Image 1: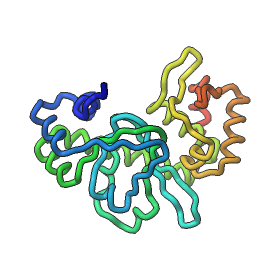
Image 2: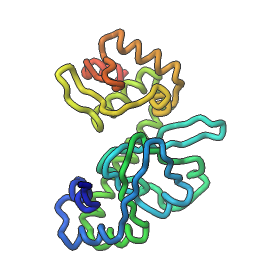
Image 3: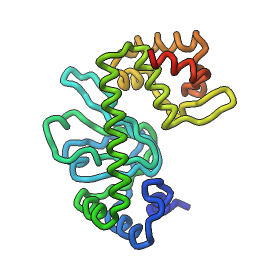
Image 4: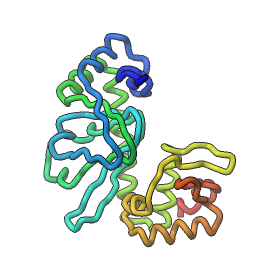
Length: 230
């Protein structure tokens, strides 16, 4: 039996503790949207007019440069928001898409309904404002790293950040429960697939990471932190 849209919303931290009437407002003002792996959600138009809550699955936000290179701005998992950082359509949004990394279920709310919800539920507005601030800070930190840090440092910091958001404790270390290709890792740190592959093998040679079930296991996160802080 499939779980209801409201069931998923109640399981999300951002919606915890709301009253039945407040849940009803969200339920009436939103609809479920299912995406298959690699399905695209264009930002031009759609994401400017709506906000999405990720119920389950993973979404990556991609910025494509004029020469065709892809930079991954962010990866969003269950319980996060998509579209709340976009206020007005602009030329800067050109080439930005959201792609499902696996089968993903979203809750879509038109921006007018979303703004109305923020007025009705002030505590929810506060939570989302805090979430926006944290997201912006994380993205800004990554952009600064791209300008001033070596590829090795950028990769180490990215792996540690991913472990904080998608990490699962294992007897051998912390498993990043996210299937990432070397191309995707390169997109996260503004490098090339070949360079990322070489850096990963070097970290593996040093005993800092292992490869497990198409995922990366941080065997020595403390030592990896030392690399990230260089």
